[in-house]
Structure formats: structure tokens, C-alpha cells
Image (cartoon, rainbow, N blue to C red; front, top):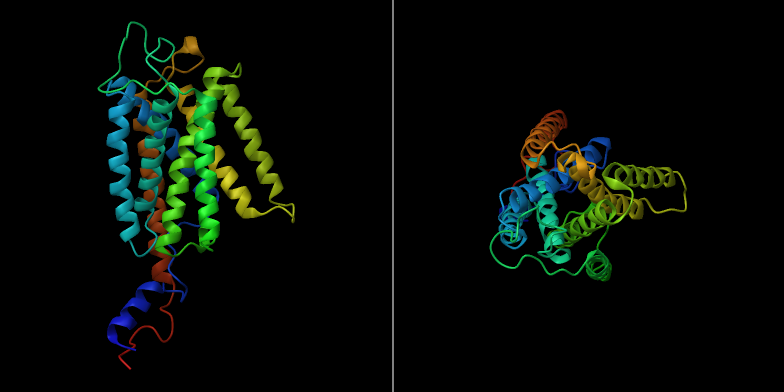
Length: 296
């Protein structure tokens, strides 16, 4: 084996002697960070598109560029880095918010602030409506999963360790976060549940999924992806509950204040997760036969 081949194998092996994982373990902290990131995605997307009046179209272009840039950093990383991973999750959440709004909404008074006739540069929205938008996004998500399955790659997050598998994963994340935004906005805007009621409904569904974990015949991988999709509308409804006016059933905390608090919370969680990863790496011995291997 040449020195180059040894170096490549070393880069694939972590200190415990297993293939290096670039995605996190699914724990309670994972779900707390996911909900924080998706809620921040809702408030952050609304901050740019509505509060700063950049509009759905221009904001979507900006956030898709941010998503591509953060994803490139994540894909180039050789190991799991909480800052890289959760920054991409956040970028998919914010991009998903404005993509969903651009697909489903239009320039009617129903979606614009009182007295506002336009919002930002470019088209105001496609006006497809939540049912049509959700149908398109659901179909696209199914296509991604079918292609993923036909590629023979695992859906289990803890076992994804190839560039191709990670590409499928992030494609599914972006579409599922966009779909989740549509679901959350539909519940908040078009149902009689309101923001708090919608959030409670989704929390109930998540609790049901958690209970199914103890049913042996139910796939944990399926439950993970269902929960992953559902946490996005939870973030959307909680974000709306925090930012919308009291007349609409919200707390009227504003997009700027809510986004700032959520960002500080998420960064704190990322720093904690990074510190845990560093402690784990220093405690685990280097795999035998890897360190000090020479050319053969």
C-alpha cells in the first residue's frame, strides 16, 4: 500500500477505528437543536423577506446561494463538525421558508402587511396555494427517496458516510424543510387551530411517533424521517406564534428579537456539541495498525 493510499484510509477512519461519520448521533439534544434551527429558519426568513422587505424572490435567491456555500463546506469536511452541520440545517430552514412562501403566496392583501402593495424586487409569488405547493414538494421528496433507494444507499443517518449518500441526504433535507414550512403555514393560516393550537397538534403527532419507537415492527428509520419532516412545521408555527401580532394570536415579539434569541441559543448548542466531540476524540485511543503505518 502506498503512502497516499494509507493517508486516504486514515482519513476515512476515526479514532475508534470506524468509518468517520459526518452526521450527528440522533439524541434528545439533536431534536432540540433541530427545532431551534427550524424555528430560527422561520423567523429569519420572515425577517429578510417581510421585515426588511427584500421579498420572497430576492430572499430565496440569496438564501439558496448561502445554502450552496454552507453545503460545500460541509461536504468538504472529513469529520462531523457541529458548526458545519447545523449551519447547513439552518440554511435549508431559512431557504425553505422563503421558497415555500414564494411558491404558495402572491401579492394579495392576505399575505402583505396593511397598506403594502409590493414586497421586494421581482415577482411577489407564484400563488400556487398550500395544497398545490405541498403536492409538488411531496412528489419531489418521493422522487429523491426513490432515487436514493435505487442507488442502494442507506437511509439511516448514523450510517451515511459517502459523498453520494450525503448529497441525497441534504437534497431530502432542503425539500422536506420547504414542505414542512408549507404544512406549518397551512395549519397556522388556513385552519382554525391558530399558531399555538397547530404547534400542540404537531407536538402530539411527534409524541405518537416517539411511542411507535417501542413497536418492533415499525422501522426506526421511517420514524426518524417522519419526525424530521414534522419538526419543520413545528418550527414554522412556533416561529409565527413568537412573531405575529396579538390580533392574529401571536406574541408580537418581532422577527428581529426572536431571531436573535434563537440564534444565540443555537450557537450555544453548537458550541456545546463541538466541545463534546473534542472531548470524545481526546479520550478515544487511536485505532491499532493505523498510526505509524508506513508504505508497503
